Image (cartoon, rainbow, N blue to C red; front, side, top):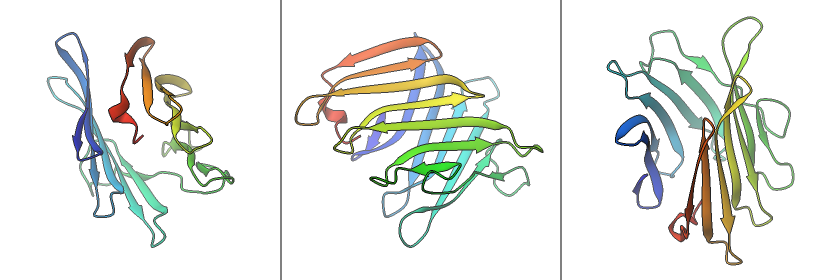
Length: 174
């Protein structure tokens, strides 16, 4: 994982010496994520981009998914943006933290493609994150913390393969 200060800007997954894929992030001057790009390492790389915009209260106002990464060529579609556990993006009514995002395709009726779920402890620190595609969990991260909130163990599962890292205090900003 690469950082710009405390902001994660890219994550690369590899299997042995072979790079499987990369996720990169861009931020605005308020440190809000403005785009997330996922690409594979195929001979002709596939790149998918999600772009985000915010309102004056720093709430997510729009999110667009672009399956080929080329803006403005007509294949982008809007992600669901509804707050307070009504539908596609759910914030906890107790603390306002993001709990779930769901992305649908542009078919009729829409099919839920990607779901992100977030779980926090009582201090608002992330305990779990999971990403599912077509209701099948593809990626999950579980954080274990000490009494000071520092991450002591991170366990990641990618398509059924699990990897754990101990004593990862430097990740405690998550």
